[in-house]
Image (cartoon, rainbow, N blue to C red; front, top):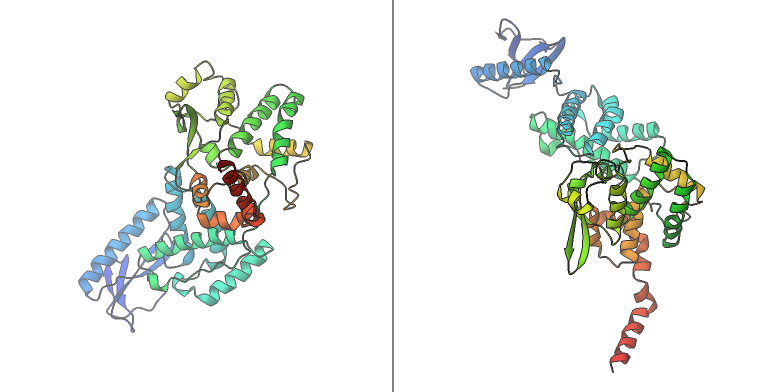
Length: 409
């Protein structure tokens, strides 16, 4: 503990001591909370103002200890745990972003074990470089750019907490670089493989046993079709989708289905491709709690019931395994262009590929539909550019315009 000068001032029956260090004009304070020494700067030069500030800080720390909140010092682990508490509180209230879970995991797994006892004001470029090397050794390989983005965002949450408490100035917050491996092409389905998959699903369902096994296969079929025709995120947006989030409307004698999707990013509306309504009708017809209600009437009731459920209304967590079993049986598991196994998320990538190449959708429109950034679309689907521009590269667009011109001559 810091040696105190003779002019140390004692508050609250000795619980708080206010003093000055020789090289500072500001009054300091120290006190003990649950066997944990806390040392703070009051930020005050005036003694009476410093006493008031020290007393207020002591009472705040006592409150935190009583309510099982972190007792905060300038040590990294204490500030990080406070940031974690804040993110978890938001998640529990349903207001936090889903990515907060990833931030919390990164802080527990990497940042707190390495930086733990280090004062947040002491973390400099060299210390961060040492951390980067240590993290690579723990992971076993260089982290990808997407992983580094998540980790950097988690670290920034801690620094935001430190800045808000006056532990560090914003100008002193280190810039966290992302030199990770760039975005790689993700496994999807070619048009031929997608057609093969859709053609084989009904027969695969018929081959299944009765009961839950058959129910899982039927749900998988409609799940695949809906995700591949909307681009929604498997694992987040699909789990949050309720019937109250589905709207069917008619314009120019055509029916459209709109989804309100909430998950990794801020909520958005997305339009399903033609045929998506039919897949929703099939799920509705199998769900015991609502199948007796006409489909259009059921949608207008805005029921808070999951869309992707089994007939008894339960939500399964095993569609991923069922999908893998189907792809394996159908010889479709391996994506020939990436060499990686296809997963449920491949359906989202397939939607993006078809939208860009077959539908000619503009990138900014696709980004809005999929709830991502234009930059993300460009990074992950840049390999499609030659196919998107094939007519221009081959001169086919010019030939088409000439043909049309000749016909009107």
